[in-house]
Image: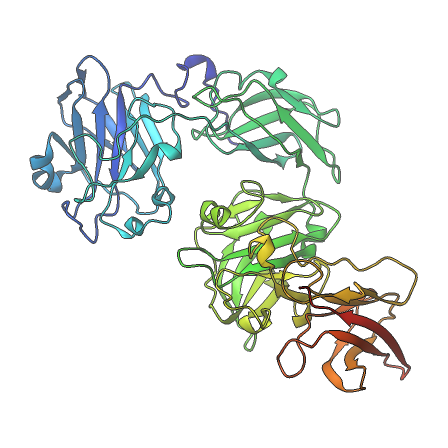
Length: 564
């Protein structure tokens, strides 16, 4: 097992694990200089002396994948230093004081940067990300990321934003976004999981201050679990590992609460929802189903795939992968893991896969920050049709052949509108199991129950209709009518036909659908001519037959209404 980073007693308040109180702070990052906007086509990191005394940088290093030693120099109070490759010092010397180091290279998408003093202590460090650009075009290159408040030494992603200076950045001078920053957002205990039966990992939304992390009284576990030792798992300070003296039992769900833990700014950690965990069970992994998909997002938006766990145990999504799937040839493309780290799903859980959880949460009502996985890349989805699949050990757990033809026909535009499954237990390959999300629900419901959700009635009749009066105007209220069949024998096939009061056929669903023991047909009010059916009384005729030749017919009247 990986060793703890027990450092809480050695550190100054507000510092990251292994740090001293920061006087030298990172203030600007230029990781993607191409295409140039106004600055040289070369990478740099800027630091500032925010203290009141000069700092001798002899023996100091910068870490950006590997450690590079600074040249001997002194940084005066309020002075900036541009750190770049030795070969680029002449490019940046007109902007101010420059420190050249060997083989300087930053990744565009983000990585860890650390400034260490001559004793090897991390004076300032952070994990930057291109997500800090948000939805700005500046993410494409030529613009730096600037720290808003150099005196706010707690690390907070919101304390960074793209430069607004028309040159693309401000190396060697006060940042163009400089302002006072205040952190009022508490760290959230997002989730928990078990690396093994004798440990629990707690995952927080932001770094937790070391004070109190080592106190077992600040954690409460259900089920009689006893904590032996808590501590940070890594230098990000977002993960706390609890070593247990009593083991977690299989097929049992536990909960965890924390208290007296804060972020660097003093905001106390919260967990407004019960944080549940347990040992995962691979036997039920195939109960993870695709439940919602957005493949044609708004301009500037991002695709997402929502999963639902329809089982009754605990599963780990790190066992699954997602792929674009060629329905005709059977070839899987863009195969990638859902997550490298354990991510548990309990019965009834939703999980949203997307490249930009923050942007998706801004566009729609959602469960964010709970139940979101930030994917490095999401399998490429076409805006008109395609096939996405969830894979376990090279076999398809669930797949959906999506198409814009499945959207509600009378929508003016399907941009930014998701397709939702009417009920998670419906077969994904059934086109009638899907419908456009209602505008009243915001056109998508990532991480929440679908707006078109319809449960199969649990009565004793073999067939039923719900509701008996429906209005297919896509207002989110009774837009669909569902004809349910229960107690079907294995091998039962079903079709459905709708008639008006004159006996004319207005819609036929003849897919010879193989029915589950409890199954359903859903209609959205669109007739065979592709237009909305007129208001009135109709009769649905269900044709149900089995392979032994038995055929049953059920007539079910219903009303199509139109709301004024």
